[in-house]
Length: 115
Length: 116
Image (tube, rainbow over all chains, first blue to last red; front, top):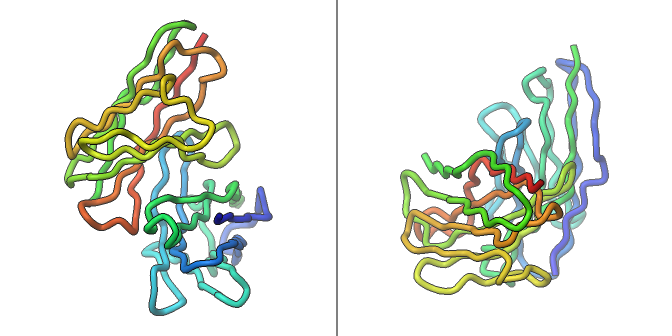
């Protein structure tokens, strides 16, 4: 079975500072990896995903994540955060075992950006 | 786009009543939809996978008679919480695969259920 670990439940950071949200996964088979963002009282929005190919994937709002197979990680980074990036971020994995259909989520990391 | 809507966004009901939540894919066909439950400050837990025209597949520990799922068309799935109790209060979120592209799920905005 797959599992996802997000060790940091909350990450406080000042505006314009860099940030890294950590995600590690466990799986014995091939995986797809995702980062979703949830703003207060809203549903999840896909931020970026890794399916295959280049291990570095980027979102349109400046986030990037790198798939590291040897370290089983998919950390999310942004070089300079904005107040509007304050939200809950969920890392998720799907695997070949379920035809890449079922998502297993981490417990989430709350990013708090202050001025 | 790939827009998924849910209705209602919030519902408050009395204990013992049933509540129906709708999940619609607005601009694409969704052969498969998923229903999740999210407790406060916790992650999403998959409850069931809903396939158009067939019975839903429930995750271990989820009562299928308690949470009735109907996927009657390629754009609509419904979740009915039967005989709701306060412990059923939660945030219910649906998602859908777009067409035959099964690698990415698109999520609805969620429904906040409060059972008094």
